Length: 380
Image 1: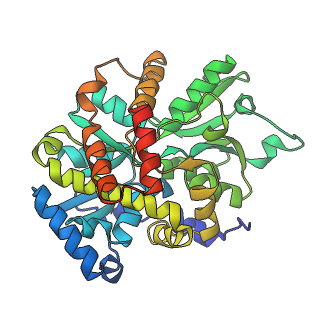
Image 2: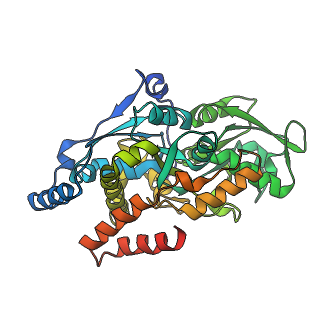
C-alpha cells in the first residue's frame, strides 16, 4: 500500500481554514453533500415516511458537529448515502477543531449532536455540564508518532522511547489520558528531565500535529487520520492504542447531546440513531463507496482512509458501549484527571436500543443488526 502523500496534500488535509476551525459563531464551516445520493427509491421513501409518521418526529432539522477525523465517518456516510433523509431529517454537518468548541455548540443550541471524545465528554459532565452520552462513534484509532531519528537503529520500542522528549498533545483528550495510563504503568513521570516525558499541550489536534514541524517537539499525539498521514511523511509510530493491552477496546468518540434536547425530542434522536446504524451497516458491506464518502469530508489519499477505516486500528460503531466508558471514567478519575460523579444520570442507552430494535423488526434476518444487538446486550 502506498502511503506517501505530497506535502501539498498534507497541508490541505490538515491546515483547514481558520474560519472553519474557529468555533460555533460566524466561523462555522458547513459541509454539503450531493442531493442525488440522498434520493431513495419510491418504495423505500414511502416506507421510511410511514415509519417517521408513526414516530411523530418532534423536529426535523439537525446540526451535527464533527472534527477533522475519519473517526466520524458514520455521520459522513449517513449524509452521503441519504440515511438521514430516509429518516425524515435534514442534517447539516459542521466542522470544529476541538471538544470544547463542540460542547459550547451544544450548550448554545447551535448544535443538536456532536461527536466528542470520551474523555472530554466525561470531564465536561463531571464539571456540571448537562450533556448526555447516547451513542458511540469510534473505538480506539489513536496513538503517538515520533520523529524517525529517535528510533534509528532500533527494531522495536514502546512508550519508554518518549523519555527525555518533548511530546505535543491535547489536554483533556483521550490521547493524553491514554499516554498517562501507559506512562504510569511503566513508572515514568511527566515532567522535564532525561527520565521523564515533557508533555506540551495545545488547544487542538491540528495545532499539536503542526507543532511536530518545530525542532523543539519530538513526538505528538494523533487520532485518525493523523497517524497514517504521519507515517506517510516518514514519522514512526510509537504505539497505536489498539495494540496496547491496557488500551484495547477503548471508547473514543461518543455521540453527545444536551440532556434537555434528548428529553424534548426523543423520536427525532431515535431517527438520527437509526440513520447512523444504517450507515454502520453500509460501512460493513460497501468499503469502496464508504472510502469515497469519507474523502468528501477528509480530503486525503484513499489508501490512507482505507488504512484508518479498515486496517484494524479502530472501529466506528454507533453502540453507546456504556461499560467501556464507565471503565474509562474510573481510570481517569484515578489519574486525577477529573472528579468522580454519577455518570448514570448522563448516559442514555434507550435511544440506541429503541433504534436498533426497530431496525431489527424491519429486517429480522439482518446479520449486521444481529451482531450489533449481541454487542449491545453484552456491554450495555
